Length: 466
Ligand code: GDG
Image 1 (cartoon, rainbow, N blue to C red):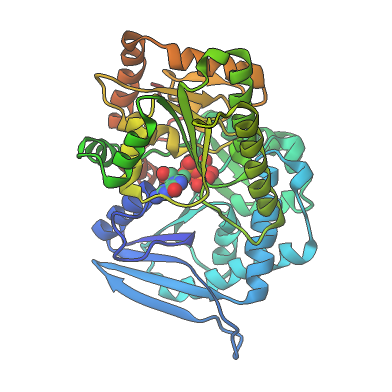
Image 2: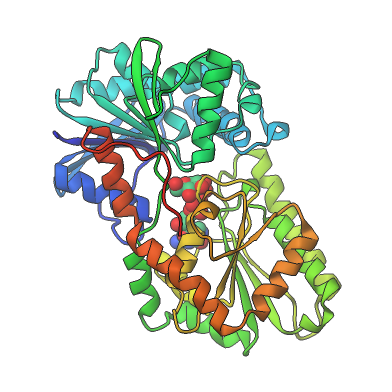
């Protein structure tokens, strides 16, 4: 294999090794090992005078980090528009929040063209290209249009929707044709892969063979399931370190009460208001638990320029205030809400302080927080994971208490079961999951994907489960 070329909407800073997430660490390891390029948006907007975008390059440990500025219009149409107001809500099964505008769609294709035009002249014939996520679905077709013949893979980090929802997008057929320009398309779960194959069969009349190969639009594309994971050893290591000052402050403030912890980007797909509502219901059904626990929600703001995100911010603050007002006392309030980011190295300690980890998205590609929570637990005295059946990780983390986040009473009962769970059962649930995550870490995910992309491994259609 030649060099590895990774492309994603945003890329980490070259020297940001430990503050970056597991995905960045794994992709960066592969890039440094093979040598290569990581291309993405700089996070900046600037107006171009000659029609060409501002491109910056930094070389660090065998890797060229290449970033492109967007114009304000690109940013509005491609990022805030088509990617985050059309694809994100629709792929998370929220058609009511989906705003489709032809202008945004044109911006989406235009930015993908800009990425392709920037990348194509940098390529060597044996480079292998790995494209990440929904912002860049058309990138391979734009590269192919420029004559690029290299192997190109795509990995979708978010769900692929059911066919009857996908067809709401006026350009659904074009997106499918865009995907067919890749040599390998990876999904997080078998359900998302099945949604895609079902769409290809029903809408396009294209069948896959038993190995997950589809012949469409004059090309052959392999599809497969590659559930992403975390840097498990890193989390275990972090969790074993002495508690950070942040975790110590938290532990002290609990005054011996139990902690239910949730960590999410502030996003309507994560089910945060429904979860806080369920804590209110829990206190209504089981008043003996008043003063017995704190539910801490950490939710840093994201995508704040998009109106639906300002709305979820308001909604979470409102429901947390209401539940605290109704069930709180002069010396205790059940919900603690922190609307900002916590240092990555402190997160593992917080996970370890928690009796329950509450991860209840309405729909989620994988959800790495669920895996991080499990990896951070003390095997001799672990916490309990309460997990939405609609998170991709529910397919693997079978030792969790599974919930339906739309069922407030069901969630309330699950909180009680989790708080009451005897030590022996907590241990017997957590141990196989930790063992599974040690085996299935993000480095393995990265290796298996790249081996499949370069034809060194057959694609497994069904991942193993914990
Ligand atoms: C997309 C898909 C898929 C969160 N708050 C803080 C913080 N985080 C970190 C977590 C975790 C990451 O952010 C969030 O990852 P998730 O997987 O939970 O969710 P998305 O951001 O929606 O990611 C998702 C993922 O891509 C990977 O394929 O699993 O389904 O939606 O690592 O720890 N990190 C820090 N402070 C915080 O306050 N440092």
